[in-house]
Length: 387
Image (tube, rainbow, N blue to C red; front, side):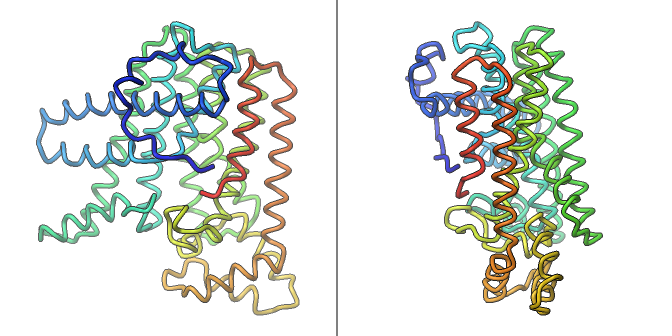
């Protein structure tokens, strides 16, 4: 699902409250409004944090500015959007006096995302993100240009670790600063704590699978569930439901829907990591291969290659995975193989099955509209996107 960079929010838009946007607008227009409000909340929060950083040291301000640019400069805002519609589906309304407090709370999910991306790029030694140098590469370049002591790579890595940690700490600060009622904040924090643990556990399982060369499909799916699905769709929906005080039946449906769509989202991401257009995805083609990611796509591919009459297929795949020097010709051959041996078709079937399962879970409960319609649309958009 391609989203345009929201950019700065105009003064006119800042002065308009959510209740001025009628429910008969197209849902996508409502989402654009939510995205703009999320951007505004993040910009306001980060500006206040910058003021605090200025009391410490101007050099720290420069680092904070880099993090702010990263947070505000792009992204699909999927997590706050799912959380918002999770709240709406449980009875929340844009005319509710607590609507702005909910927006601030769900906006904090973008700082969790920033932490995950900055650290993930470092662990994967990725050079670019959203068409620009990753944080560790950017600070390494600054070190190199200034001729400072030590190695640029070590400085870049250390800075990325610290900025990712700051993003995680500030995510907690932003959630706690949301003017929710005490019982709402208590319920939200229980979900928040589970989500933080899950995403870090998923990241660990990912690097462990790479180190152990664990190529089992069930391992890839477990990583997808905790590294991506839990904090992209499942827990954001749960967060919105918790703030609204939803009953157990709705929470259960959100878990089923969120886990399935979150995994399908990651499977689409895996396909884009091999077949995506770098001009659209903002990442080099074949990046997952070079990083040695044991994705479900590659797990299916390796299994099918081992059973193939083409005995060289498995060797081509294994030689490419984790090879930083892999050639464009080899990447092209890997793409061809994954199609020929049916791995791509199998992943597409899994995406379709997960999407159908998610929509069934959603249809089994009564949601306050237009949340049900919009969540179904988001499910399709998240699993059929091109970036």
